[in-house]
Length: 141
Figure 1 (spheres, rainbow, N blue to C red):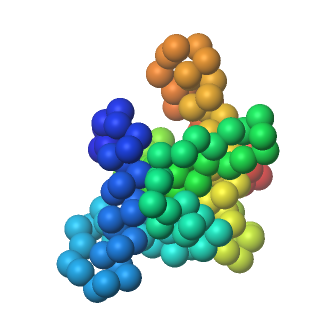
Figure 2 (figure 1 turned 60 degrees about the vertical axis):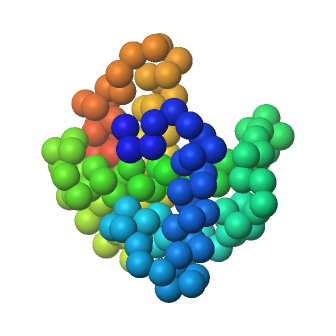
């Protein structure tokens, strides 16, 4: 796991990556990826640059956790880069071509990823990679 279980350290990594991008400081490859995702989500910039990045986001209050959302983008991009599960690159290519926008295609795919992760968490099991890929392929049909 890249970030471990420390939510504060993870969120600080987002904040630090954005600060480095803004100031032109040298960045690691991961920091560049994080900053790119932040740049694609200007609506979350306030959360990333807040003095207190530790606040809770409550789905039952209609809130989206910006760090979770951006983390799902990063996870999806890693999956695509490694083509794991096998076939995910083709799904993204198909959806991006159809939508005319890679970012929009990622959002559609993230819904499948989030559902798969939620199921795994609720069942206290590993994510079902095959079921996840089936969901993705259904999007591309």
